[in-house]
Amino acid sequence: MKILVINCGSSSLKYQLFDMDTETMIAKGNCERIGVDGKIGGSTADGRKFEYEVPFENHTKAFLEVKKVLTEGDAKVIDDLSEISAVGHRVVQGGALFNESVLVTDEVIKGIESLCDLAPLHNPAHIQGINACIDVFGKDVPQVTVFDNSFHSTMPPEAYIFPIPYEYYEKYQVRRYGFHGTSHRFVSARCAEVMGKNIEDLKIVTCHLGNGSSITAVNGGKCVDTSMGLTPLDGFIMGTRCGAVDPSVITYLQQKEGWTPAETDAILNKKSGVLGISGVGSDDRDVSAAEADGNERAHLARSIQKYQVRKLIGSYVAAMDGVDAIVFTGGIGENTFDLRADVCNNLSYLGVELDAEANEIMRRGKEGEISTANSKVKVFVLPTNEELVIARDTKAIVEAM
Image 1: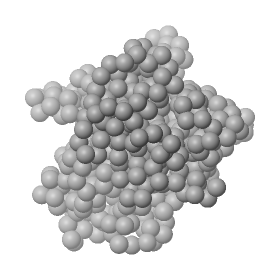
Image 2: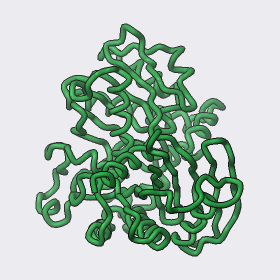
Image 3: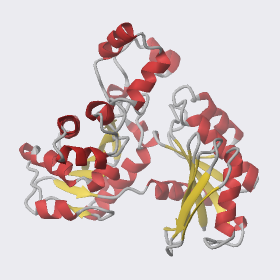
Image 4: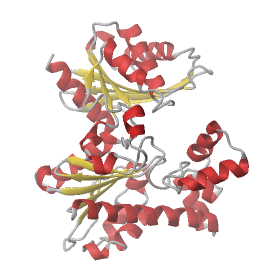
């Protein structure tokens, strides 16, 4: 069975084609600048690569170009779209409506639309992607939506209810939802596999660290708390997002600077975090290089990042009354060994012992343990694979039809 996985942004369309008999990637790519001008690039499992400019009026046009590169030319991997059995879509916000992956229906699309206020940058783009897919594939090809927050639906009320007047939860469903759920779900399950243990018997803290970052407490295979909240802005310092700050800081600056709600949103989401502190940029590689050159603000930004990560891990150990394993994943989590070292070396009270040599070589897609044999808590670097989770859910739902 071949399954196409789609992740649509407002001006982008990322795709991966999987052979689910072997769970291997056949081809992947990205359509960029949809509605502006357009560019597509990608690669195949056997190493063929392509990139060229092409105008994308909308997501349907982008889908047609994906069809072309999959079925024609030097990067061809299938003869016809009919070889694709189903399509799986990533959807950021499922709210309280969707606690698991579902087959796409008119009612599901309406449900996703009703949640656009909670994810104004993401859900409208996902709907465009779903509708574009229907235009290209037709209604006979089953589509499945996999929600970023569904893994976090097992949180207890004390973890997801914000201490504001309860009426706003009742009226507007203002609560903690969490995101990166497919990543946390994948690496926590993979952690149990690597340890050779049943996930129901484990307490795991998973750290998805990238330009957007979140940390999750997984007890017995279920999320009991996570750092992102109503939106992906909550939690700790990220590339351009501030994470959790005193709400009065925001109202104070709104009064002083005269920020509108839209300006406030832009500053907190796009101009804060590592970028706002360092003044260098949001990419960890650029900020690390600046720190190495003696840039004090770059050093401060990375110090805040390391401090907040280990502080949050400690809070989740308290929430679960213990921890068996800590997992690092995401672009920063998988590659930034000095951050991992700082975090682990400051968790000695838990009995964490870092294998410095293993930590330094565990980069660029490598998977493995970075704690010593004597460490009371196991620490792993496990590359995430959110697309495979989406493909697996899609396959299971389609086979159950």
